[in-house]
Length: 238
Image 1 (spheres, rainbow, N blue to C red):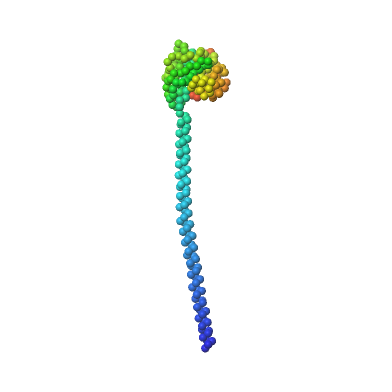
Image 2: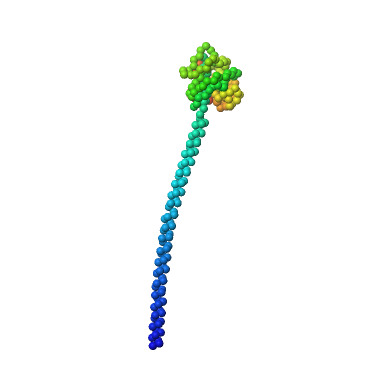
């Protein structure tokens, strides 16, 4: 009997230990699988995409705005530089002595305070408003004065000595500083080179070194072919 009782008790103990192992193992594995997958998925999907989209939008707007502003400033600067009156000698007539000065700039200006010269003669010009593209014809003596059609005129005559086709020069100055490269604004010489103010004109960049408009005894005058002709090649005789 004692042996039977001990055997029965041993069987009960073994059976009890087997049930505990079966209950513990599946519960632990299920818990690990449930917490790991949802945590990883939610974190990746929610935080990454919105952050990337916002950064791209901010960069695009900032770059475009700065570019437009810079271009606007450059355009304004260019317009301010190009504005103003620019006076140039455009015609010199020998038969009926005359000089024509044209405003080739973009704004109106006044010739008051300007001088013309054929060294050693210098004459100050009268104050007269000259619009963009307008010309002023100035008589330099003689019995005949034939200003171009539509040109403005100045009363009286100015004396720069004789003008003839064999050779001469005309310089236009913004002041009476005749030796200054800052004062001479336009120049032309014909027949030959090396006249009294040609060196000043060359140094100022308003005439080409050694250049002159070719003329003959039959030449009535010379004229610019195009505006801003600061070299003999931009002039022709008639």
